[in-house]
Length: 395
Figure 1 (tube, one colour):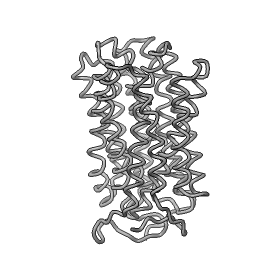
Figure 2: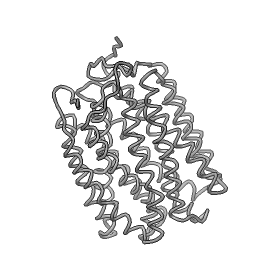
Figure 3: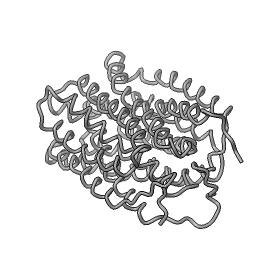
Figure 4: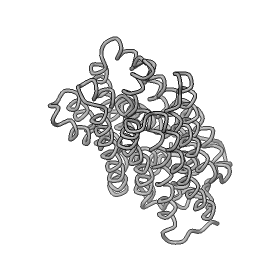
């Protein structure tokens, strides 16, 4: 039986937090650059949306299969190769001479993210039952915090030095990935042993999906659709409402930074009060602030964005842990289904939403999207949580 020194879970998660920061920080270069790329390559909103769809769909379609691979064998290298692909692909974005090359880079980036998330989240999932929500929240907030840094780094860089200099950004990213890999390879642990002392093995018995997992998964899918759409089109929305690319970058960073804080706080609260109640209230409260951003006073844009980001991202780690607790011993598969496939369905909406934005305007379209977290909150009511020791979701 694999044992772990005290504090080992936190040390390992800290490394993976940094890996998540690098992967998602570079992975989110596209959204803040959209207003500039739309002008540079003469893109419609539908074409711009398709770029995001390609990245997220490749990610979502491959994550469940890679999650099964992670469940069957220890693969710390997947948590290193993934961010490396993301760093290289997104650093080359400035050299893309046309839409087709840009689309290819998004596909490579999607594959890199698909490699990273199941492998990394599986290691995090080995935390003890008492603090699994907090550990997953810490890991998840690393990605959102990295995303919050992307706009305030990439937009000033491109404005100051031009698109042709973006490949230089690969150097610090690859150095960071190398250091992360060195630490992970020295601290290899068995990610197959589930948290909470369960001895379930992914090879033992048939895969059995609990009924209540369906309501949880559907709630995560719909919330993810809203979160993905707003984060992707946020910079375009802000420029449409009269802001400059710099204001758009600041708004997007505020949205993601508050989201990282929300993830961490929600993970802690879910360990104390349960997953269901945290999921319900965070999803419910996201809608009012999204609508306030769209129609409220422009001077309050940043506070509204901060509140919206805090609530809409808070459910990310809580949903992942709740899903992992539904299927103990299948953390890689569950992570692929939730962090990959569920969020990928949200990515499928980007191109259709962009097309609707071309036809009717982006603000009216995003008004409808802002109502989706309410639907997620209602679906969470059908998710039954058991809180004896480590919460269980047995059918």
